[in-house]
Length: 242
Ligand SMILES: C[S@@+](CC[C@H](N)C(=O)[O-])C[C@H]1O[C@@H](n2cnc3c(N)ncnc32)[C@H](O)[C@@H]1O
Image (cartoon, rainbow, N blue to C red):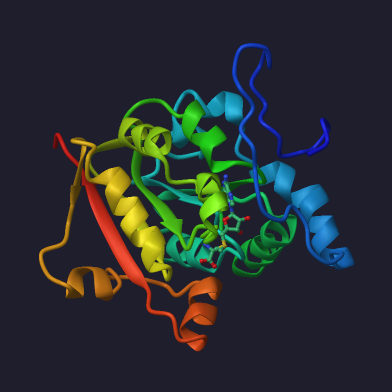
């Protein structure tokens, strides 16, 4: 990644903190002119201000949101835009390093005049690290890059440090929601979240992870997974302490 990459880590001093590595695509095919214009003009207006975020996600919105929700790796943004449309009184944050995904979501924001959405082209872990304790009602991680080869699994975003950060930023009673079509990643996530005493898995029977939660909006990646015959799982974890 080049040093002037727009989505590299941006710790103030840069000196003390280790840089996190982002894997996967940063860009796809060239943006259409209208998309480029939205990235240049609209994104700065609704971009997550990482300095302001330290005061809490509510500080990013003009009026205090009912709930504050983060989606990490929103892809084309279908799920995030659907949540924002459904809950206009809440504030939604989305982070995605893939430029074409960000551009796609900006198109939806413009078409539907969505005002309760703040975005960052970057690393979800960077946003987590800036958030105050117990400042989010929910975090969504939907179909994270699976990195199926054994030697690549260390690239998976779900690791004990990521889970500890989720536990820090989600308020007691709030939720971490995860979906994947890769059984091995579902087991991997359970193995990393269940040992953390701050989370309780909200599943009693198979339907609780075989069926999506209420209000689920299918993502583009899920559509592809189902077309190709893979079976999704949906995990809900409640932050304990409420
Ligand atoms: C398999 S895609 C799924 C996209 C979308 N959630 C969906 O279900 O259609 C995984 C996404 O995670 C993004 N991603 C990878 N690492 C990330 C990170 N550290 N922070 C935020 N997003 C990340 C990728 O760019 C990609 O768009």
